[in-house]
Length: 268
Ligand code: PEP
Image (tube, rainbow, N blue to C red; front, side, top):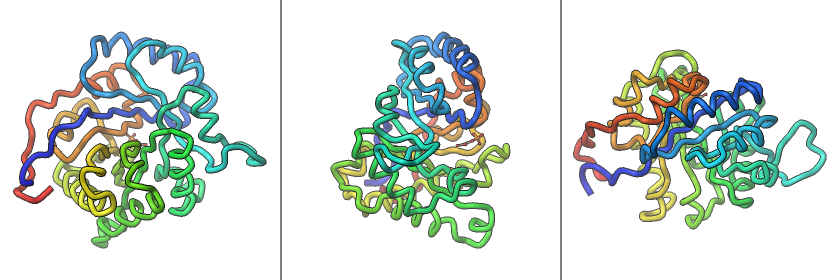
């Protein structure tokens, strides 16, 4: 097939990281729900810190906002002080979990092996997984972007059956763009998303790969979201800083998919 893929329901995810108390988070959700108003056709997801998941779930109530965890342990329970398991996230109302964020890899020693264990554990307990992949500045400068993201992708998804692909999302997050204010250009993001889609198709031959959405993350703002989301390879965004204010996150969640930049005649 040449040209555009069918447009999927976009996923707009807000990663609060280690920010916001329950009180602050509840106020944000109430403001956000009011601003989102009628359904926009996009799926909106919040990833709050563990201790406030239940409070945020309660504040979400009937609003069209999903809840997810920022991390999980691969075991369901046991002597793992400070950790949280998939079944605990489910019980707290989570439908999603983020796995392999670069901050987990760089600050907490997560490896492709532990990321893979987490991916499989999350799928096993019925969660949807957002697997984060992305190169750092040196890897990009050395021309190793493709091999780095491919390695994160393939190692992260090792042992995952094609039948589980429908519960996977990939977040392409170039590390040099996270929290820096430097967003990847649409060409850079589109190119990497295209590579990831090619790899996913090899791993889960179509149509199994089709439900997998590939999100872009890295300094997404109300100002750049429309341009990013105009790329047909970008199926949503993972937002850090700009998800901490209802006004900016609501604007991002209600992005305008006005124009679609056609893929440059490649098979997709
Ligand atoms: C992130 O942490 O996943 C992220 C994309 O952060 P920011 O939007 O602040 O760059």
